[in-house]
Image (cartoon, rainbow, N blue to C red; front, side, top):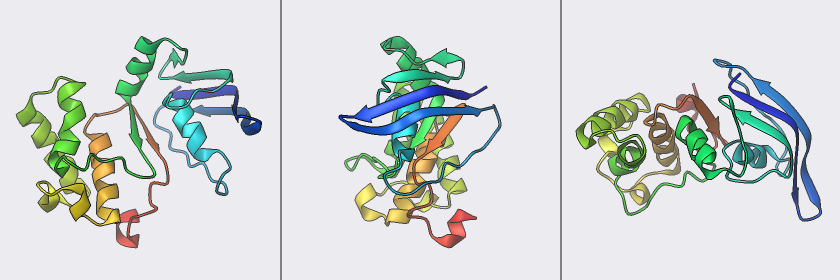
Length: 174
C-alpha cells in the first residue's frame, strides 16, 4: 500500500477536525477526497506529509509509519510530492529555480540535469516559456501549473494535491 490511515484523529484545541479516519490507498491508485470547506481535507493531507501532527491513530506512508522521528519524516517527505492550495512558490526565485531547488539540494541531482527535467515538466504543463520569469509575473493558473511541475521534478512515489484545479482554466483541467 502507498498510504494507510488507521483511526486517525486531529484536534485544533477543542475542535475535532479529523475523527477516526480510516483510509487505504494502494500503489497506482488515484483517489479524490471531497467535502465542504472546513471539513478537514487539507488537514488530512498535511498530516500525511507530517506538516501537521495527528494526535491519535496511525499513518503509514510508503511502508514507513509516521512518528516523531525526524529522520523518518524526512525520508517520507523525499518520496511524497505536495502541491499546496496556495502554491508556496519562492517569489525571489525564477520559475526554473523554483523547480530545480529541491532536486539539486535533496536528490543531489546536478544542476544541468535538474534544469532539463524541470523544462520537461514545464513543457508538460504548457508553460516552458515562463521558465525565466518570477512567480509574481504569472497568473494564478500559471503559478499552479508551476507548483505541479515543481512537485513532479522530485519524481515522487506519492503525490498529494490540495485543491489541485482551483486556479486552472477549464482547458488545463482536462
